[in-house]
Image 1 (cartoon, rainbow, N blue to C red):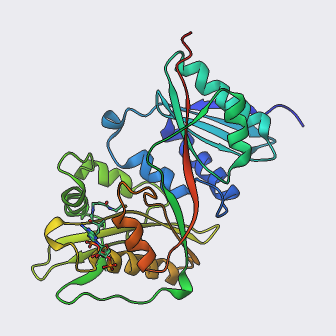
Image 2: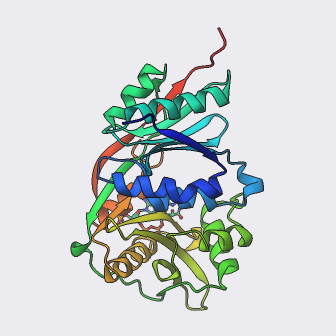
Length: 294
Ligand SMILES: CC(C)(COP(=O)(O)OP(=O)(O)OC[C@H]1O[C@@H](n2cnc3c(N)ncnc32)[C@H](O)[C@@H]1OP(=O)(O)O)[C@@H](O)C(=O)NCCC(=O)NCCS
């Protein structure tokens, strides 16, 4: 077997290959899902997100590893356990590009092969907020209703209202603009039939949940969920998430996935997903390669 060969590309070009590797390797013990990558790529406009390129490593026409400069000091990394040399090369590419700045990355605590590569490259575990992957057997998901509200999926052409619903739930400074949402809607595996909203009696979108289905694995990722402050505490976030996941089940999804904060700093989302039946699995770990300056 030869050395994996890299292709360094803008993220817009590299994304499908990165998603393909994430899908091929997916298990409850891996971090990346094609939908999470799509969201990270497209939740804002390129001139706002300032994403760097990705280095995608192939062997015999198969993608075996990649590293993405989500920013100059933040690396996303995905490595086939059967191609550790590709993982080494991906990390080396990122560190060469980063120069002397401290760089960070995040893995699942179950991704031991990636952790070993990062350890060898000088990364250290860092304290801080973390996320717990949660899984749900979709056969167990019931229908939730909230009196006074209706639920439906969005349509193409509704990017403005859908983006406003997200922004009003998250923060006024959110970068999810109409233009960004239009771009998101054209990023696979996005599909309108899995992007759900709750409407109040006046027909305003007041809560939302976007689900991303990887048809190869049957895993439906919920990302993101939001509810306008004045409508919170009525079960809307749970109900709209359940509606979107049931729609995903109707088109072949078997497993729900969601990745809320697991530390005590932001406990509400985890509680909301566990009420739907999601079970906690592995957690994330942040690692830092301190500045290379002596
Ligand atoms: C998190 C969020 C989506 C919850 O929306 P919501 O419609 O109020 O949620 P629900 O009514 O379905 O409540 C779910 C659970 O969280 C609880 N909860 C909701 N808001 C809470 C608060 N401020 N403090 C404590 N508990 C709260 C509810 O009581 C419920 O728990 P219970 O069923 O055990 O009573 C909403 O606060 C939000 O949009 N926040 C900003 C965006 C965000 O963090 N999204 C989630 C991460 S993807």
